[in-house]
Figure 1 (cartoon, rainbow, N blue to C red):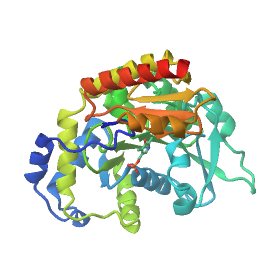
Figure 2 (spheres, rainbow, N blue to C red):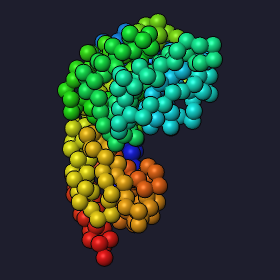
Figure 3 (cartoon, rainbow, N blue to C red):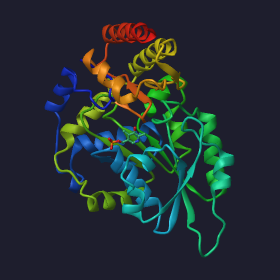
Figure 4 (cartoon, protein in one colour):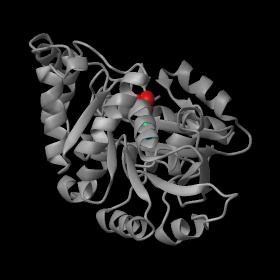
Length: 343
Ligand SMILES: *Cc1c(COP(=O)(O)O)cnc(C)c1O
């Protein structure tokens, strides 16, 4: 099976399992798990932040960040295709009691002018604009990314407008292998950052929220309230540390393989268009004669698993468990289908 449904499907490598097996653990609710403490330190140092918080998922790190930055009746500003808006069950409203202002960005990316226009004036009847969330890479945008100077502009704008800025960096390392931007410099632009270790980096579970000490101390309380205080989760944290030590450079391979798929799809008879492929995500729109559901069914019969991203849109994601032979096979299948659909 060639599973391109998501980069969350990866399973631990032998080396990672060995690292997990040898993890030193303790009770993290008491702050006594050495593997978790060391992961939090490792990532916060990497991004020049004061502290980190290990959580079970990227949804939880995002939700805790939103909760920690805002008060009820505040408003969050983000792109209309953001994960925090589309894929977290409206958690911003449920957990934080805040409103949301959606911006129509370009392939998931928003800019300073759009943020300036989205800020509410100070009236009794309007929510307080408080927080901006940007995603890097942009999942629904097709894996597009912001480089350092684009993020710097947004950061300056947010500072000037007294808005907090959170980075949903679920796949940030897929971006960094392309831009070569420095994590420390990026850390300086944000009030908080969420990093997923369970995506292309290949850990089975785990995300880390980064921020300044006071922010993380408050975030710890919200994590407990949300039921995210884990005990001997150092076994998981050790997998995450292993991923950071061993799996970052190879993300470039995932990105390059996604580009290979994108190039083939551009020329396929059933494809209307392919979103720009910049990292490890390929989103393409099908011509009207075939629905995403039907196309995915055909792919399944050929051993390829993918997800629908709308009635006519399909998403492929490359990752640790997809090798070059699988990509070559997938390309051959996509080309073969192109011939079939021509008739
Ligand atoms: C996957 C993802 C998350 C977090 O997802 P979890 O499955 O909760 O870990 C957050 N933001 C983006 C952009 C994502 O792709």
